[in-house]
Image 1 (cartoon, rainbow, N blue to C red):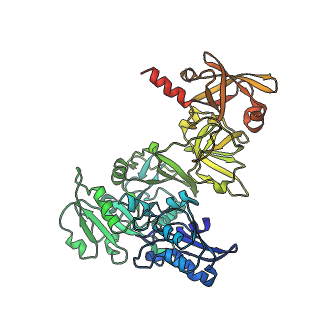
Image 2 (cartoon, helix red, strand yellow):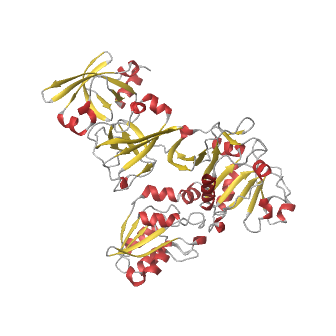
Image 3 (cartoon, one colour):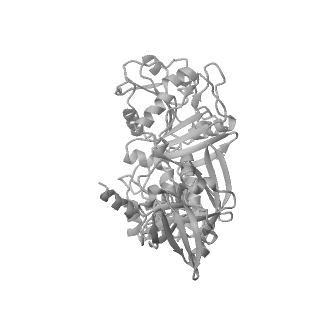
Length: 549
């Protein structure tokens, strides 16, 4: 399935309004056919793979990143194509949200006697086609804001100075982003200031340039601009709130009038609805500050790609819009020459849960501070099964995986903010330190400890460590603000370990560490003076709120 996802990714930016799908056909452990959705959305991935497989598809398994289609459009249903090829098993990553399909493809296959399995790498497949899903369910494209930000928080240099904030590697990657999107949008002020072409200029990908979109409330787009002069080669759409635009239309530019907002600018909701109706699934917004702030403030920005450059733009440079990063989770971080790309996605509404049962003791492999702190943890987990964006409790702190290793070199990475470092023990970590690890609970998992969120309430200090038979009797000092939630025979999580409180005396409390816990966690190394992350029981907090109403 991972191979199929890799194939599907090749199609991004070329298949709208269709989804980008990959298909791999396997018989007797050998790949006999593979394909991905072709330019313009047809033929579909399954058809390409079946053609390659030929007679070898009989009795084979088809791995598909999206439910095979079940409706007749410009091509026959892929579900029927798989049935006619005598495929005996279909493994699909995710159900198609299109109401014309939505479970019907699976039903057709099952009625024909084909074994169907679903939800393999579901989250990765859904993320890959988030634009298609957004267009179907939200009636708008997936919106990614791209910004280059200097060390002093500017998105543009002083007028008349060097145009670029980022280096060549980052700019080249920006062109790759354009190739993976259906449309790119800027405001008229950006056009007037920079006269951009907004095309993909990576050798070999020049034909992957997206539709260019300009928000122009007063129709000021010059007919001499690079955008207009190239409109015959790459489409240009101008959204405005006024009549007119005949001169632009005569050059091949499409001028669309939409409703205006309170500031007289084209209403973003109307613009996005129009683009979705045209089949646009993925929209890249490149500026300027007013436009990007509008997308942020109205909740239309699904993803952020922030290129951070180690340069000073200086006084007079344009300030970056305020980022509500509390609403976003970091999904990736990569170096591009001297610059760093940080990618964010809107946070899911759910909270990860843990049991407080440690399943691995990892080790801090690398710590790098550049803005936020990037931490690499060596682990025994099979990281092939750990998704980017997944939650892992790291000594009691819920952290989001932003990068990972391989089955042969097992590690994962997360980024910790200054707030996290200040409110937990993570700020004291050194390379080589052991770390208690637990992956987030999944539906159906056994609850062996108690419900733990991975949100650290405070840092407790070890006061005494005394032998008690074969066990250890350990006393901790809790912060005053947290101590009131700790009760005898209640539960706490200490460095991610679910423990029962034996006794409480003011801000001090004691727990018993059995030999097994000492052996399979970091607590076999506990000494007086050590600091641990403390999370109190959810029920204790809830009861306290009721009592204090």
